[in-house]
Image (cartoon, rainbow, N blue to C red; front, side):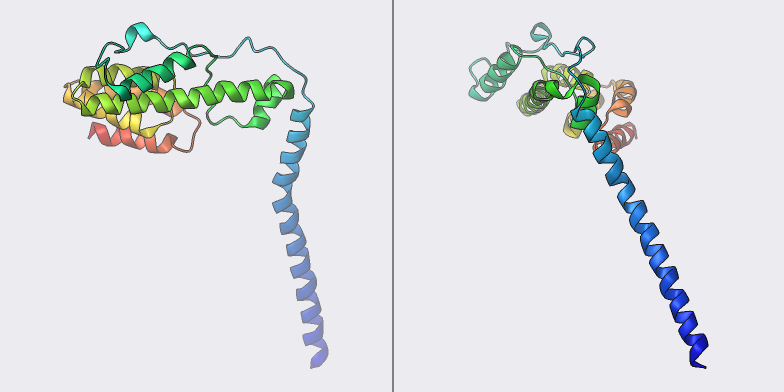
Length: 202
């Protein structure tokens, strides 16, 4: 009676060990692929940056003249003026590894600064628009948000406020125009933004 049990137990141990080993190989595969990709990225030589989508701040289309003596607005505008002196590129959702693979490892620090400039730009535009909206400058807030959205910002609050303004201005049909931009965003907030648009249309 003991032998069949012992044999079954040994078979179970061998089967379990096989499954555990197989599972470990599956779990380690993505890690291995990542390090191989990272190795290739770190050895990619410096590439041209000719195809970068540089963002230019259109000061002539923004409400720079509204509340000129307001300290908070002056701070936002000073930030924008400072940013305009440096390259701005939106790399939201693109990993450092992918950036190195495409543009070369030596360019990573430079590209990271461009992306950081964009992060500051998107946040500043959102804060400025919200501030003006609370002050009653709906039209001016919309102008800022439309520029922010055109740069494919992934700040969900910018889309939410813009949709609210469209509804207040009786132009809800403009919400539909935001979908292509929202759906092109490479970010964890992409689904949230699309949901905001859908709920705003209801």
